[in-house]
Length: 148
Length: 148
DNA sequence: CCCTATACTTGCAAGTTACAAATAAAAGAA
DNA sequence: TTCTTTTATTTGTAACTTGCAAGTATAGGG
Image (tube, rainbow over all chains, first blue to last red; front, side, top):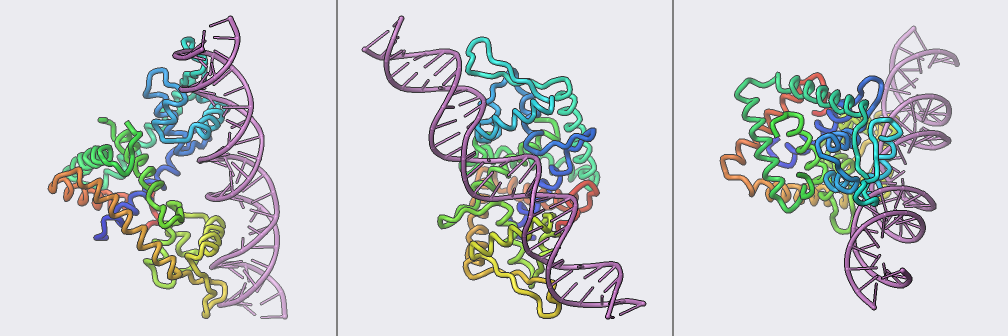
């Protein structure tokens, strides 16, 4: 476990598993991608399709279909912008908001459970480290450019 | 960025992007899943199908097909065990070993680049924190059970 | 010699993805 | 105004991934 790559490989896989389990709420099973879409729509004010797609680094054509699915599930609505009818404004339905909140709670519970296996000092250090790592990745040229 | 969940959401997505870019080597494009399979085969001594599938928490039937693909790509071989003909022993071909090494190098370069945006103290703290986090996840009941 | 267990493979059927081409609205040029 | 270009989004298609159910083949216990 001395190798940097190995360390991150394990981390990546564990997160993958966490995300798989994360989003089964009230009988509805939500994929990680869908949960990220809900999250970003909730976070931004009157976002357009392209905006969210770019933010999540998802191909627009793929994103278009994902939104269609979320609309069919009754979690998202899409209405043409009044200013420019080419744009569609995305928003969460009541059920969508409920789902986003439920996922948030569920994920935080999972994370709390994981953090409960560390002492207070470790918890703080790990959180601070994740922030530092995120910032480093944001500055990096090799990845992660579109995210925030 | 105060929310634990948000912190990890961003981290997860950035890793996703990193993994997407990670594995285009010599014209051959390798998915994250395939790179993990190569990695695990390389790491273990005479592993069987089920062993690796379980390790990576991939459905055996899916894994069976992924191995077929990797065999077609000339990266993996599969030979029936002499002891028990139901088992297949997986191993990397010369090209597969080369690929695994190339991915390892490439990933480490990416990580070095990311780490270059931190000072020495931060680098050490972050690495130590990842280890702590991995251990916590290993102890956790909510995820990650099959990994190592 | 049968019966069950185990390792792995196929048959679907659904879902994801992305390139190319289409549609539709806005903006600029003539 | 009309023509052309740009921009936002959607569809056609085609390849790939995934997982359940059912199948094949080998091993081991009775």
